[in-house]
Length: 379
Image (cartoon, rainbow, N blue to C red):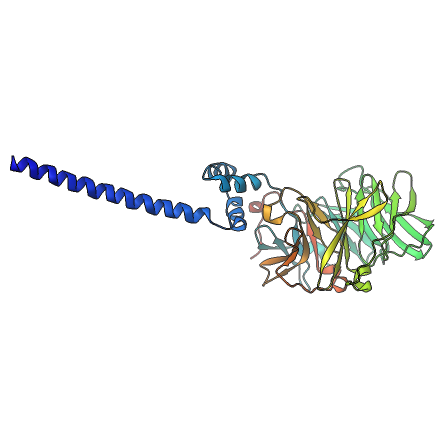
């Protein structure tokens, strides 16, 4: 009888220890889960964005916050990469703003070339010594030559990939305040076509590319903010009667003229005005009312600004949306300069760049390769 009682007491003691161990383990797991649930949203977005789609879906089942974040980064586009031009040699650097990684690639084909524009993965190049104009894809190494042409002070763009039958290369330069010379060409042509057009309003070309192709037309912003439009089908040139935005009192007029960028997105045209230490101002063209409308939000669109060509993207990482990314990196190449319209501030904070005085031939935004792992990147 006494032995049976001792066995019962021993069994109760073991059970109590096991319950205590399970309870302690449960508390630790709960504390760890609560710690993960309090991660900053931006950090959580970055972590989950690195997962495969399968793991992303699994992660979304953890809690409501993780579900919201996982859903926001589940389907994302790739942002363009910032391509830096070397001062010596042929090694070009490519910066991925979403991963904050830099790659390098030897491109001897670009020796003696000046990069003029980029679109749909193709660079438009000009060789001043030989006056050769050509297209080049930096990742496939494909090259398409155009007829020789003296490209001095023109601003230049092209409509679409040079492999498309609809590809048109367009350049414009002012001959006088009331006359512009427009030259066009296309892959397969034997010569460029140049025509002088008279302006109804004074039009002085911008110093660098303020030029986009939108809805079948080339839109060109003058130095003082007037909008010239070229129709490649009708072969017409007009100055739109759309008054330029007024320079704010806290902006320098020099910056207002020179420190601006132009981008296109799904039929909308954006202009980004910058001024040294002031926050940038973004306008969208209201075609119906013939006016520039200041944008307080980009509604999820991200703009990538550079003097040679600017781009727009949607469905990027949540932390990259509704922002403008400029063609400059800081902190030893670990962070790209950006401005958030949500937070009304630069990242990193307190940027004081006179964009109008920057070297335009220092960098350009380009389409990234489909699969980075297939390339033999330089160290």
